[in-house]
Length: 480
Image 1 (spheres, rainbow, N blue to C red):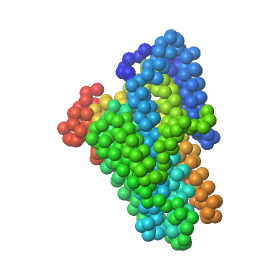
Image 2 (cartoon, rainbow, N blue to C red):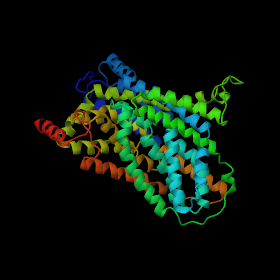
Image 3 (cartoon, helix red, strand yellow):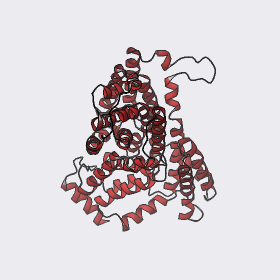
Image 4 (cartoon, one colour):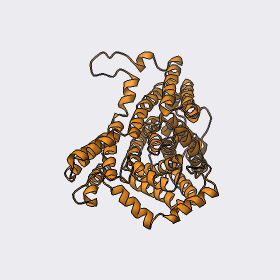
């Protein structure tokens, strides 16, 4: 995004005129979300109407259109969308290679029961979400097999169900192929290696707290046999985790995320075909009829089309907000009356991200909305490292998002819980169980601890974030 201090657009009504696109966008997103009809494709119309409404408040219509085009053509958006395309295919390859059945085999062969099996379910969901980069997909894929299995192995229904949701949140928070990880990294100008490496202590600390809760309180049911689930086990699917390892290692070595994803895609395809869980024709073939899918590659790309187009529209709206001076005014107000120290800056980043994610039923769009326009300038004002800004935003967006029932992933998770419970004639917890999601609350606690104490904080000049840096930042703030 361009420098926030450059005001290019003049609008009728001044600041209030500049708020029109934002308000139209937010009202539309909230309306669809509360009606439980939210999603990246339904959100297209909201962003389109926001751009149309803003045009009539612009004094120079040509410059307004140019601003929108600058947002659409922003290099950050191009990287994000390209990465999503390869991440979408990677996720489909992992599923096609039998990762679900492999993780089920890992869980069922441990002999775990009660609270221990609930912990195994949490870990399996973590691994699946890390491997596929999709939280909603994790819930939809794993719940039909892991929820009944855990129920019949003596797990507490509410904690068993939220173990899957928590594992999905962990993967969305940390996976280098997750849409939130990609958006948080590239809107802040951070490298994927720095983001994953520095975010790991935050995510694993929260996972440890959540895992302990699942282990201690996740039992209490009656153990029964479940041959239907055992029949779906396939140990070869566990080999697909090698492809995830390839992506993570490549990213940590400093390779571009798109390069890392290409290596992961190739590895996943080779392993999946070698172990016999899919064929080359499954990956790509000439369809029998026009309009049918050509295979996994097309399906993977199609899975991110909604998000990609919404990202384009969001970037256009955001650029208009930036060039109209609205965001600059908000930042000036915040710095003058609310933000005086680096601790307050970090708490503000957490707060504004959570607030943006509450009404919007998808978390990556919330990051796109506040990442370039608010989070980045606030963080840069206090010289926070790009990876630190990305971590604060991504961890914040993975808290409330996995708790509130109108969010896409929670709705998808609960639909899968109800469906699987009806299929096996077992009881299901209420959707309010999501309000007690252990990982999300643990992540929120860890994030607040990090912002207040400075643990894991890093600065642009010194990635270690020592006391000298803190003094320099405080001096800059006081001089302002």
